[in-house]
Image 1 (tube, rainbow, N blue to C red):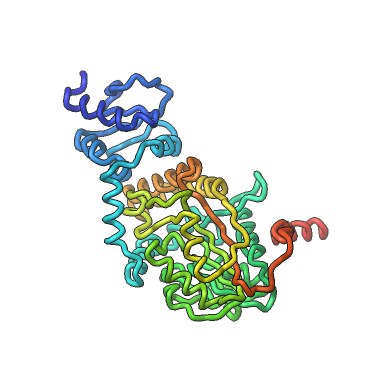
Image 2: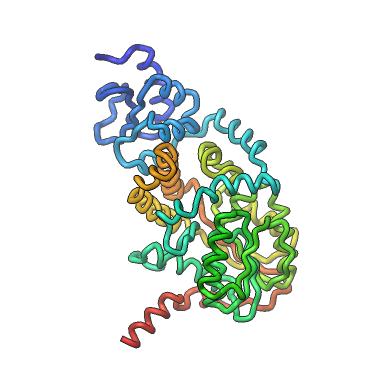
Length: 407
């Protein structure tokens, strides 16, 4: 039975709007499509007319909700489909919606607590299903193709420590410490003392318990507080995966905190999701997954570092490492998909599947970047003369050498 004319008109309009992305759109049953694309092209199945109308009105925002609700199904590789959809220009309605979210999800101290609670306080049990054993929820660094996610996360933490050339006896402030893996790694393997700040209740409780269990509580202090309240002086300031949660309007507050911490004699590292040029976060991701998020362009970061005369020493883009990290996360997530459904419901599970698939697509496509920026005060004297320290054997490689030597 052919589609009603109204559905065919809507479907044709939507297919024209998505023309830059070669994706077959169909409604209801097989062959209910208005495109002549080959059968090898991925197909987006739209379950009902109301869903079709919602997609026509605003595909960038409504696609995610409809997929989460099961009113859209994808036949083919989900990551591939989302990557193709990134080729579609952002609609004016999505831009307006994103600006409205900026007003609603302001990253004031109270707003930040609400935004962070929305994402990070879901439950530790949920994140333990698909993260690595140390619960590192930031871009890993794969030093070689065969590296596992666990090895790559340890290599990333090692790389961060080498980039700020930590030395035994120094002090470090970490802003946005997650579940505590980096702070504990710095203390255990580089002999420093760390004050680590976070406003997530679940994460701080996990980190404190781990520090006690591993005998590092005297060297790492986990503090549940906003980064704006940091007043500790330190040799180094490190922030991994927090800047994208600060928001453009609050960059000046962050840099004032950095200045209070290291002044003109210390050094720092910012590891963050960014853009090649200023653009807001995807509206659906910001609405459902990361409220208040803004991935800054590299020049926006330079602009807030410049007034304090910080010297930028190193910039690296690990974009493809983040794509691979998200691939590892999605693989584990799919392995535990039924457990996520049982714990948090099918709509939540589908929403997070789409978020992880979309993250892979965004980093592969180049819509998102992952920057590491190393900087120092103009009077900082403890700067290496070459970059060779970045490529010394990692902790993991040293341990493997010890095992080989004793076997």
